[in-house]
Image (cartoon, rainbow, N blue to C red):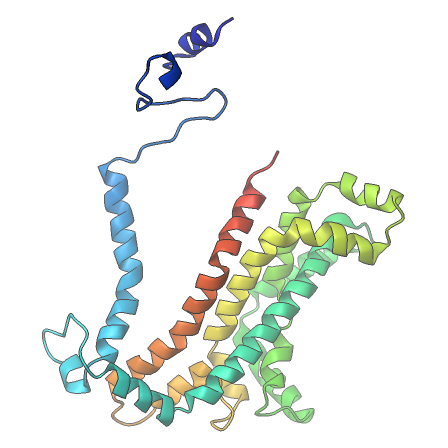
Length: 306
């Protein structure tokens, strides 16, 4: 059967080729490659609305940070950036000591992210592929911790941190969040489908121990999920306010606690508060610009099988 008859039976037009007299500009369909879906007007309108809705809060933060408070509170408010951005950024940086706060937040978020990826990947692999007594009960207990409000653990956790001498120190923020139930469940669900038992058995036949299996087999397979979990964990740790506000003091704050100090006065300057919020957002945007391609690539690598 020729290609022309096959494409005719499938209802597809044969691709034009310059070598057979075609212009090469027509619609080309390769067998087995699938078709590219075309978006209609509704698709473009929806994407534009979602894009504008996502960018609008960041743009308003930039506009408010570049005016004085009187202009920000005007009706109607300003719609374009003004000329006070640099002075407001300097004022927010000096008043809230944002330099030290950013360093503290980077240390906290980095340690929490690395520890979460390490422990959650190991625990997820154990729950997904290893057989041991009480596995189902332990997994149920881990998932059940997600239903407990974090406010219930504030008082005993605060007393524990004070008793071991970590009150007001970064360790009191880092250690309680080194591993999370969501991360364990997320990695377990991913490895349950993405990691075949045949790979593990082949590694055992080659004489690999458990550490070698995790390093050479589990981690490469789990890389897409680890990139996504790492990004979610870093953003959550960077934006966390409740527990750092209770555990730390004004001399050793994270970025969100420092921003809370800007708005704690009786009449806070909203333009300076917005300038501080803009400073706290820039590192997250930088992280996404640097690692965004790897994260998206990891997601696509995990989605494509074959």
